[in-house]
Image (tube, rainbow, N blue to C red; front, top):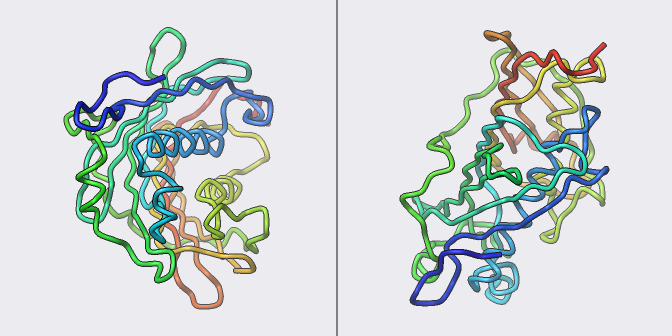
Length: 265
C-alpha cells in the first residue's frame, strides 16, 4: 500500500508493507528477532526503491548495487508471534555519499513500536567503490522534513579493552544477491556474541551498526566485544575483523535494559 506521491514521477513518497510475525521470526520470548526486523526493513526498502525505478534491477543494469552502510534502531516494543504489524519507510535525502532512509514499525492501532534511520551507498559492482548520488537525487522522491529518528548516524567508537568472543567462517548460506555476507547475518553473529546464559535477561532498546567493509565466502571473522554496565542494564561495543588482513569490517553499539518478564535462568 502506498500513500503520498511525488507529482513529477508519480512515485510514492511513503511506502507501507503489512507483515505478520511468523514462528521462524520469533525468539525465545516470542518477540520478533532483531535479525528478522532488519530483513523486513530491507524488504520494504527494496520494494520502495523498485517502485521508484531505483531498485536492484535498474542498478544492476548499470553495474551498480545498493549496500547498507549505517543503521540505528530505537525499540519501544516489538511485535510478537502471530501479531500483524506495518513497516513504513521513506527516503529522506542524501548526505555526502549516503542516501538516507527512515523506518517506522506500527501495530494495528497505529502505535509506533520501532523507529530507525539508515544510510546507504551505491557501489560500483566491479570496483566496489561508492558512486555519486546525482542521478538518485534527481529521481528518488524525498521526505526530508520527516524523521523517524534524529540520530546523526555518526561513526561508532571502537570497543575499549574488548574480549574475543569467537570466530566465524563465512558460509554459503551467509551470502546475499551480491555474493557478500548479508547485513542481517552480521546482526545474528553480534547477538550470539553478546548473549550470555542462553536466555535473554535484558532487552535491546538501542542498536547501531556501521558496516565498514565486506566479507565473502571463506573469510574468517573475529568477534570482539567490550561490555560495561549502565543504569538499569548494560551497553556493549562490538568489532568484527577479517582475520587474514586484520581489516575491521563492522562496528556496533547495543544498549539494553533489564527485562523482568523474560524467562532467563
